[in-house]
Image 1 (tube, helix red, strand yellow):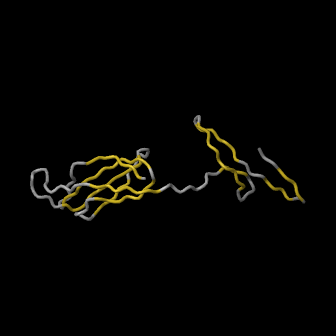
Image 2 (image 1 turned 30 degrees about the vertical axis):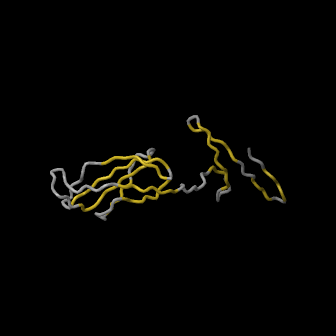
Length: 132
């Protein structure tokens, strides 16, 4: 509801919080005055809460044919379980056995590959983890 106050020919608008309904869900959005003097709904900037998770693995020493494996790098992909797209991290330390991830708090799906010196990818390892 709009409330107008008149004071010495100055108009002051009192902002209120309104509820909007989207697909059966109710969301409260604050109202503000823009540069043109019009009221508008806006979504305040809210930074996501970040946490950490350590992802560990045991590196293979032999390829699928039993030959010694020369690891070049690891490729880690992860996503929130609610997101369609993965984020990719290349871990170039061939001796690495873990990676500490800082990301938004939540449940994640992960994929890890080992890439050898000739550029061949290992079989994929999939896993789930939580960032707290």
